[in-house]
Length: 448
Ligand SMILES: Cc1cc2nc3c(=O)[nH]c(=O)nc-3n(C[C@H](O)[C@H](O)[C@H](O)COP(=O)(O)OP(=O)(O)OC[C@H]3O[C@@H](n4cnc5c(N)ncnc54)[C@H](O)[C@@H]3O)c2cc1C
Ligand SMILES: NC(=O)c1ccc[n+]([C@@H]2O[C@H](COP(=O)([O-])OP(=O)(O)OC[C@H]3O[C@@H](n4cnc5c(N)ncnc54)[C@H](O)[C@@H]3O)[C@@H](O)[C@H]2O)c1
Image 1: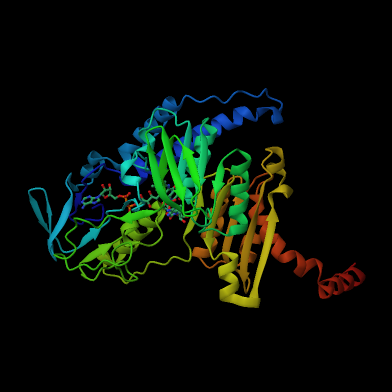
Image 2 (image 1 turned 180 degrees about the vertical axis):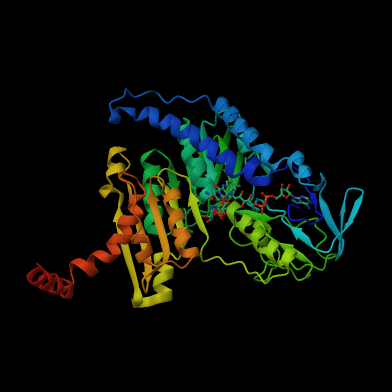
């Protein structure tokens, strides 16, 4: 709209979508409550008396909703109408390849974008439909503190919510069918899982939930091997389902595929006039990916320029403490792709002076380097989510390690970890190299 296109925006539920209302924003706000409680309990390491860290669970939810309210104006109907967009608060449904019905209105458009997102996946586990359970759509409204929260699913939702809840005074058990945080490098994921276990979260891996029994306040999850795990509340966090039901995909001549809508590299569907972006496109499901997709299709929709979405430079982070972040290839992926030509360099937080001062020395960075360029970065530790930004820049622009090493970072910052990791790539080349020693020897002898 700001570039002069005529735009109609349909929203059937809340403006701002999942991220603002049921996802990123409330989860990060609740994590902040957990952090505040935890830092009280561990203040004595800084010479400050420990506090109880007692949390008022209902008040943490007030905080969550206040944070949502502060951000909401950015995504509001009024703001978008201010850009000249016709905002219709209805669900849309294709009635032909070029027409969408929203309530009483039928809209004909040259280009249509499907950005309907995803919903919590509720698998057909026997008994689940007979017990009360939470999802990301309800947990942020729950005001009575769960005494013992069972979480099925050890992905980012499960682990972020597990740590927030244990810090707010709940008992927490995570039931994970395979490996927790299984999309990340297992060596780094293990650091997060160890920290969560040390805080008291019970994490049961290789434990698939096969049956659920009980009633409000007394829930039992029975594993495939017949083991019973009991708690008072249940949170389902086993992945997402693309929002494609009731979209009239058939009438729109749009093909679905796997968990989403089939798209080509330019995010176009089988109907060339229609694009699908964000979670509904079934790829990486992050807000920054949805935003990136939007940029990709604006180029082709408004300017008619060729445009392709890539994934190799997309970072992600899990906001546990310590945080876990990734961009590009993991070590296992990079070894598969580059074999013996791959170099892996590491640097530990324990050698960063700021991390020592803040008592946040758990963690490390691992860089995957091929022919002098980073092809992947994995970081676990304090502010890993912030540190990954530099590597996201490096990968997006195919930068060389020498360009990172040329950067001067202020001392003492956590960010020096990035520079030191780049330095670790050059150290053996400089310090263990007989040629370098010979040249320095000659220069020392002959230069006055
Ligand atoms: C608990 C949780 C925490 C998360 N944390 C993070 C995080 O920290 N960082 C991160 O990057 N990602 C995070 N995510 C993922 C992130 O929320 C999603 O990737 C992101 O919201 C996807 O954006 P989207 O625009 O594709 O869809 P959505 O944000 O889901 O928006 C889709 C919108 O379309 C509307 N809609 C659906 N069908 C129709 C229809 N037929 N007509 C009209 N409107 C319709 C919906 O009501 C919704 O408002 C988290 C997700 C969850 C659940
Ligand atoms: N920090 C972030 O950016 C962030 C935070 C939360 C969510 N998200 C997004 O939301 C998506 C969904 O998150 P999620 O954690 O729900 O999904 P996920 O797919 O990442 O993890 C779900 C986990 O549930 C397990 N599981 C499935 N069925 C099971 C069963 N019957 N018993 C036990 N375990 C079972 C799976 O093995 C998997 O590890 C993420 O992939 C991510 O894209 C991002």
